[in-house]
Amino acid sequence: MDNLSDPHLKYHTFEKIGSLHDDNITVYYSINLNGDFKRGIYLTMTNDDIIGEFGIKGGGLNQQFDSGKTNDMHICIDDNYQGYGLSKIMIEYMIDMIYKDIPNINGEQMIFIDADASAGFWDKIGMIESNRYGYDRNPKYADREGAGYEKYITINKLYKFSKS
Ligand SMILES: CC(C)(COP(=O)(O)OP(=O)(O)OC[C@H]1O[C@@H](n2cnc3c(N)ncnc32)[C@H](O)[C@@H]1OP(=O)(O)O)[C@@H](O)C(=O)NCCC(=O)NCCS
Image 1 (tube, rainbow, N blue to C red):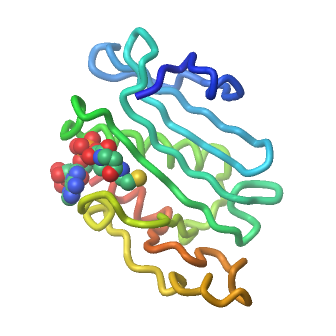
Image 2 (cartoon, helix red, strand yellow):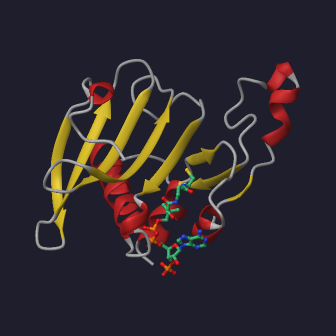
Image 3 (tube, rainbow, N blue to C red):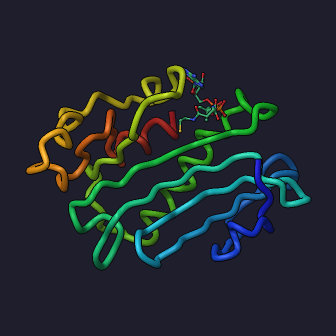
């Protein structure tokens, strides 16, 4: 995976928000407010190599979730670190940071995934088929939240999974 100092990450600011496993893994939070909102949780080793990444991005007006535009997410853990609960930890950190930033966020806010290539992970966390999947085939609905996205979950349910 990437390193925090890779050129394509140079516009990100990384805030250290925690550490795991006797400080061998550092937890960073990144938020980019230019254009689309992009939030990320990154897990790194001491040499700044990234071993885990969880991102949520979407359109917003004053904050990320107030415009009715689609917010989607992606998650990845380095092959060598899978199966140790790190994805759950990243999700919990992310939702904690969202609540810190937007205390009155609607817990029913939907987060989508474009197409499910997760080999069962998204189903496991409780994502369900979006009935908006077909919307983008009709241009009239193309701007609807979640149009063309395969599955969704609410912030509440995502948080509940992370603590399960
Ligand atoms: C999907 C992925 C992020 C899971 O990471 P992980 O660190 O291994 O997951 P965790 O150890 O935190 O597991 C959390 C829970 O999900 C379950 N889980 C993990 N992968 C699963 C899968 N493919 N199918 C079903 N359940 C899965 C675990 O058993 C665990 O369940 P539990 O809490 O009841 O014990 C990781 O396998 C990965 O990076 N895959 C490649 C990228 C990918 O497919 N990303 C998703 C699409 S963007």
